[in-house]
Length: 252
Image 1 (cartoon, rainbow, N blue to C red):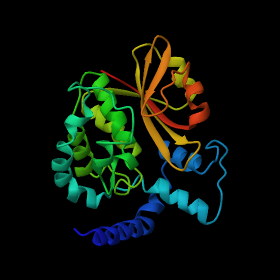
Image 2 (cartoon, rainbow, N blue to C red):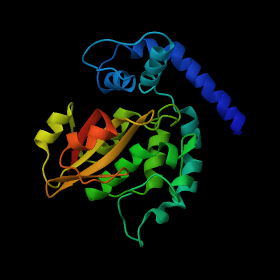
Image 3 (cartoon, one colour):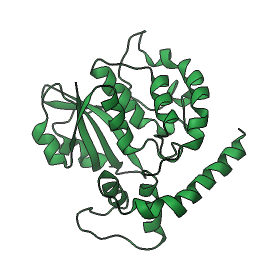
């Protein structure tokens, strides 16, 4: 499919989402509603929203996370699998599995996901890759990407990365347990050495969200694919990184 054809198809998908997906989506509640509020810079507990075009833009941003599109990504999943499989070995360190701790440079820049490359939209799947590895169930990144693309788990053809609910569901399908925490205080009250978490937050210094895997050892938190710290608490970690959206512990 030519590039301009993909762009046109993407526009049609967005238009369909606005016309069909958004009205029903706004009635739902949960982490996506927190995302809608927090990305807009609003306290999700005070019930207020901005008005006009900016508010509608953010509501579309949040509503798109609930829509089950991903048409182009499903179409490209097999070709991306073949392309990305050739890059799997480059993610190893000296031929040994190791957590991914950056989102730039090769081979990250060449890995394909949705309509972009991994340096733009890969943080959620990097967190999934790292969590699986830390819990003794490593999977090639090419296979993880293929699994998400073929089932439409991408967020607007991965322009916004991966749908929030899907990476938690994927870990559960790999036989892992997940426990959600609605607040940073709840996270800090429950953590212990050896715990693995996946945390999603709104970037304080740029538009958009970021997702990372976090490991606790010796009472300190060490996130991957962001400034490593260590941090004495999640409150400490998120104080300058951004507003908390969603977090869960991953375990066997």
